[in-house]
Length: 68
Image (cartoon, rainbow, N blue to C red; front, side, top):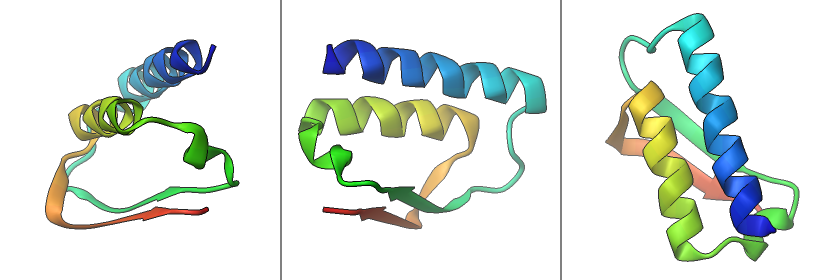
């Protein structure tokens, strides 16, 4: 069930990206909050980050935070 959530979240991010277009520049901050990110596997985080990177590039100086 969690894998399906990650898949659908990726689709939703892609849909928003189509609506608003690819961002210029790069992502400066990504925050996974609310406690539930602890349920995600490493592969699921990678999948979400890959989806985000396609919409707005993630660079080496992008701050990524996970609320635990």
